[in-house]
Length: 228
Length: 271
Image (cartoon, helix red, strand yellow):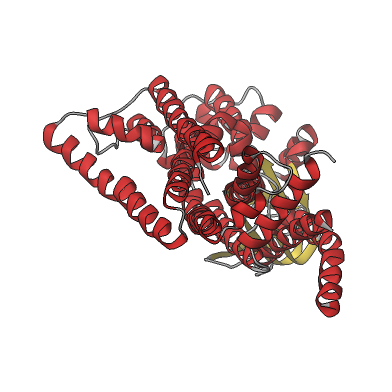
């Protein structure tokens, strides 16, 4: 009886912790702000539509509408990897404005790898090369590990993203078709109180173990009360 | 029959008396909700950029959402030790427990296990679980800072518990022990804090802060990290070895007080 009481109280405690976690996890992610952009995208070109650092509790929802089929990529780098890539770009193009390097680290790395002989003065004049889909494809073949998610060719899509850990995310839209596309993108920033994928499993485990431990004690308690 | 069964009997009795169903469960729910909500908000808004070192960030993170939890678990500790033990002595329940085939030391241990260790286990369990769930990378990277912050924060709680134990044993009544205990806590942690700050600020000397840091080692730890950020408002910035010294001194004081409590309970308590 003593052990059943002890285990039962342990169970009710675990149950409460699990329920508290569910209460924090359950509310849908709120949206503090959003941004949208619209414009023409040349054939066989790609562009960066958004970039930012996200944690397990911060994410975004991207919506895309396009007149042609486009592909959307979410490219993710850890802070250390991103800094390493920026150092490489700075070393390759020492005269390039630092703002350019910070904004376009990923495309600049892809260009450097595709055209190792391209130097500083040329880089700002060769945007056709920098933003060419073939450069993106080649870069992604070399670094497939940075592709966090990619869409199939589509005209409309909506996708919600929360990273598992801290991640610098770059959102790329590519127009592989041979005609210009009008692309409208909307980024809705999301914030969740509990990490979306990390919280649910422990919560369910705690609730299950809690119920399993508490039920015998609660039944025994009720029987005891009735007999008294 | 060994000592395990009577010990468990005394411990379960104390547990049932200290935490009526569902008081313990409500307390746990409140603590867990607070931990997860505050950790969630910190997870969305916290940024390393405000802090020069990751250690300072980790300390601030752990401190900022564990101190309200300490207040929450402090309530049952005060109630169980000051009122619970004091009332048990007043009503003769402790005398009944002496009829069990257990030494007085074991009886006091079972009582303290329920009154003090259970709330502390809840505090540690919920807050560490919350930290690992919401900030696994920060915690895994700085386990030493996390452990030191917890140690520094728990020292005054244990000191309070020890003083309440001595008061309960001396006064042997519930309500007077609670009133005297709360007054003592107010003097130690509110009035002494203000006096120490005023004297240190007025005289420019740090000796009073050093004395106060033995009672609340978190002061030394906080000043150490604020010092690394260059934003300390006090005129005392201890180094890391000093912080360890104050934490050790705090726990030595706690150990002395509990030893006195045990010796008093075993040898001098006449009932």
